[in-house]
Each structure stands twice: as C-alpha cells, then as structure tokens.
Image (cartoon, rainbow, N blue to C red; front, side):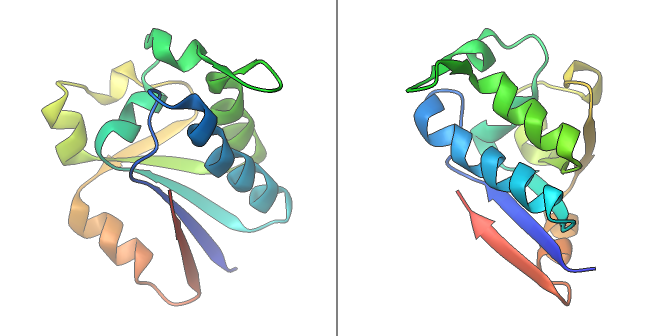
Length: 124
C-alpha cells in the first residue's frame, strides 16, 4: 500500500487557519485507503496535547475548532507520530497526548519512514 506522510513542521495551534489544511488532506487521503502518517515536528506536537486550550481555537470561515480537524484525520485512520526532541524540549510525554495519538519517534526513525519506497511526503 502506498504511504503518504504529512510532515507538520511550521503547523501549530498559533495559526489555526493554516493548521487545518494538512488534517483535511490526511482525512481525505485516509478515506481513499492510503496509509497516512502525520509527523509532528517542533511546535506542531502541541496540536496533539490533550489539555492544550489552543486546540480549541476556531478555524474560519466554518468556525470549527482546530481539534475537530485533528480528530477527523485520526478517526479516518491517519496515525500521528511526534518527534522525541520536540516532546522533550516541551517537557511532554505520551500520557499527555490525545486519544488516537500513535507514538513518539526519534528523528532518525521519522526520516527512515519518509525515505521508504512508495512514500510521498507533504510538508506543512
């Protein structure tokens, strides 16, 4: 099965208008039976922190919470992985992440997944 990796690099809860798109793409690709992974790097790990009030910021023009887009992607079958360095730098651990979050991986593991055969990578 072909895999799509969506790297969340500059995506963060600080800019909800920009953050919704990669999750909409992830949900759409998963609905098309692609194997979809979300790789959270840097500040984007904060999109998956359960108690982060920034996840409730509204995305216009629909007025939906950013968290709804994240949950749509995970419910559709996308898997979310967070960079271990980004997690460590923010003092976060796996128990603080939302339901449906997959796991924390090191940068080498994330790179290996991105460089595998039959993988397409989109970066946001």
